[in-house]
Length: 419
Image 1: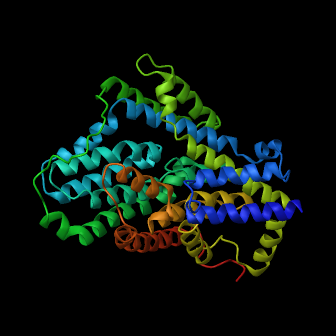
Image 2 (image 1 turned 135 degrees about the vertical axis):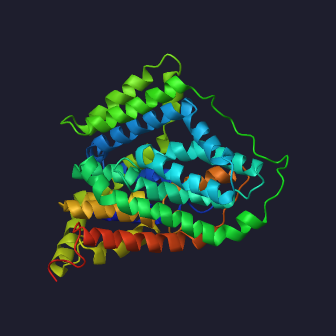
Image 3 (image 1 turned 180 degrees about the vertical axis):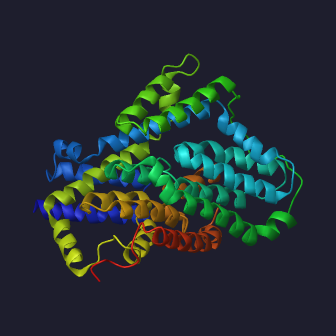
């Protein structure tokens, strides 16, 4: 009976991940995952000790620490400066688009992209509106560039952090495996958006109106920005040592919290606690399913058939499907909980392809959803179709190059070795 309850809760939770929210209720993905854990606890199918045992604490600690580092840049006004650089640089709209893709992609590779998105979206909207431009293509560019740029490193997005921690992947090797496809993906993002939105960006420029969004800004603080840069460089240096990366990141975060200018409450409040809770709850639900032994029976069948996701033929459509149904973060958590001893090459492929697959549809990544919700709060609404016109060609082209790259560099075979 307990196994049946766990399977049912797991199924309903991941259906909720695909739907995005509960019908008729304002319950999002984090709320759905939390309700799943509560239901398992209430039915005694799982205990609090079981939940704690299934949570990968190093991943959560590293993610929390990266959010603190990103919060340092936000409080120092660094993101405000980046937004002004994008929107106030003289030139036609193509220049603004290029800067949006380049800067957002670079930031996403090394900083927690949720805080980058939260800070940049309203500033970008206000800046382009002030120049009389339609903000929608630039908001789409921010979302797509964030997904593409975050694919370059294992600290670029939540799912990569999980893969890097569980697989104990090298930062330098990860950059070699995924950096070039991420860079090519950024070029593709720029080219596709310019082709799709070219007429609207150059033919509908209007005089700025009084309806420009009023956005709270942070005054630039050069010393605090330098402090954030030093902290980031120190973190990357610690990744080359034998110190556990989550401990090194936590030490850096602690040094930033000991700040004479920004209160620790301000820094901690910038952390995306719902995202951390989503991770913890999904670890609990998927871990409970793994404890039943049911997934292992399925894994054995897949191994016998040679259908494990350790080849491009299997992994590519799998990441594309799972990322755009249940989302790339939940899908990676699920795979990492039930996939025994994945090869390093498959982990690099999973991180790269799941990140790029997130650009296909609005529901493909948490970054997309955050951008849309943040933009809507400032009066800019993006439709599913508007995003898909860009997301579909961007994803097809960028994943095609990524597959070629992974095969050419011999990170992953084209077909399962048992075939």
